[in-house]
Length: 335
Ligand code: NAD
Image 1 (cartoon, rainbow, N blue to C red):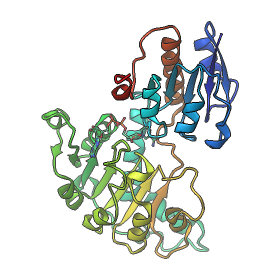
Image 2: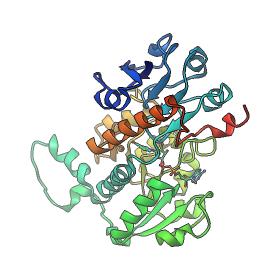
Image 3: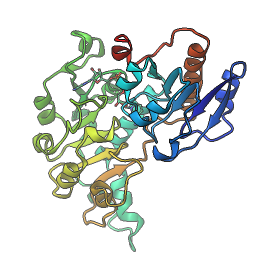
């Protein structure tokens, strides 16, 4: 029997993976909370499934002696050293299609929360000794959603799903994505624009790019300075796509109107993270900032889907078949 290791996020017993792989492998959950906790524990694993709480660093990949495949149970694979794995002949795969609707719902939910001021009013009332004035002044200045422009940065699977939802809310949708196939914007009924135009024109900017060298700190002080003072930023992509220190400063100085953030540079964040400090601060008026703990992907159905699809990918490789979603093919081919 092969040994399949699930590094993080999934608690034992791994019933879903165990059932899917019962004829070929035993499955073990390590429940690691840090990358360091994995040292020495993966040496004889024949396949690894990892989530987002740990990194498969070059050191850990060099320890692998039996591994045939690494499956990232999720979309983003920036926590795996793809190049080294590829050079060692090890395919890295992801599950690109499990939670598209969930993340799009989360981004649109955060956008509506910003625009309608739900948690903003809540923050004030919850700790107040009196619930007065109990009127529109508690939600700040509210724009009509249908009059707003949503700027989507990265119009792939999730970005497009968010765009279609926003169109149902009667919003104008503009997108910036240099890699979008020409004409796809017509399929979605959105306008394709440049980066700076999107920043200046949008009432809400929503991030949907992968984390790459190009997208690292794509929204920093300079980009934030180009946004309208009434605009909101939503990030459900990856934490470091946004420079969170610059965002905290822009929010504190009220240079943009608010933000909805699901992903942070370090997760879980430390209490001295500038955005966490601002979020916890007791300011009057409160800042329209909502943070969720990387839950955009989550629904019970989506989690089940990732687990089943990750197991199926592992099973294909262990049975000698081709994996479906290899993300380091660029380096594997050079072998
Ligand atoms: P995708 O690959 O389908 O789409 C990404 C799009 O970004 C592509 O169209 C690509 O052309 C575009 N892009 C790449 N570089 C760009 C750049 N420099 N500027 C503008 N656009 C660029 O990916 P997806 O499945 O839609 O996922 C989008 C993001 O959501 C990823 O970062 C992923 O990790 C993240 N995600 C987060 C969660 C969560 O729980 N918060 C869950 C799933 C996915």
